[in-house]
Length: 404
Image (tube, rainbow, N blue to C red):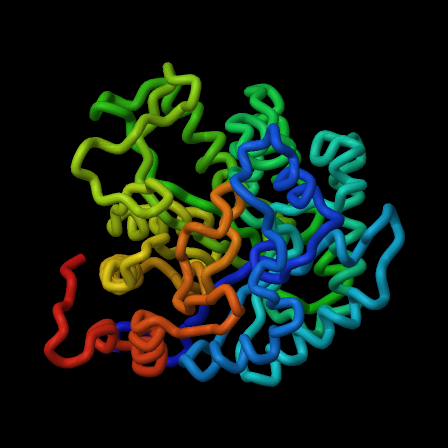
């Protein structure tokens, strides 16, 4: 076996990307703003809001023993300090259905979307943003904590800051370097406050999920002070500052790509070199980056879970190759002593991919216009791996096995 019996295998979603009808958050406004960079509306998503029980049963049938999902803040707290009993009861049904399949829940409290009222008063730059977020976290875990064995406070705080406040491709659509850095600081404080709130109200194991791209200088240049400053904002801050009693109990590593940094570029990054394998998102495929970033994350001393990793592609053979090479890199990191305890693929289903809309295909499971779910061959391959813990189970006898 390449992985132990108690290793967690599963996939991930987020509420706004699959539920549909989340009309009271900042993303809904952003999607419908003609001046934004959003391609289209999330609309009905994949109607997971109504189909969650069948979706969980399907994932369990495919060998998953864990699942990551998020709670939609704008449903829970539709107005400041006003908590919806109906929304709490809905998510209680959702989490109970997940538990009843035998899968372990990883529940994210903030996955990119903010209630409209929170965004309109300044979002993460409001003076009391951290306290308001902690109040929401405290309410959710007080109500649902016994159904949430793992809680993630904030999903990809660096990307919330980068995409929303420097690149402008996520809400609030700002391009301001000072606000970018400030929001990065605030979101780390929000994580610490949320850890305290969760621990005050439940026994959940609480952690943070960070996206950790492999950053390298453009044109193979030496690491400059400018490069190191950018890497600090995107990687180092959110690892080096995970110290002290409010750090959390685990760390989620989310890895997708290698990126080339040019501090002289207004965009900070430059396109990958010609000939680099790319996904539908234009992201550079580099499997060993997962191993390297797991080693980097391990310096926090926290147990690690890969809470997102996957490829947007219209070619499922490409997805299977991606799985095989990245999971081989993960197995190598474990063999080298990195404490990685689970892998959750992004994504369970094709879904709404933020500003890129519905075009990118990340799912192990395809979803048609009629909402019919169809597991791809990669989903069945992943099921064989999850059931056996063997990398070679990804390929049936006679199939090509990609090298790492």
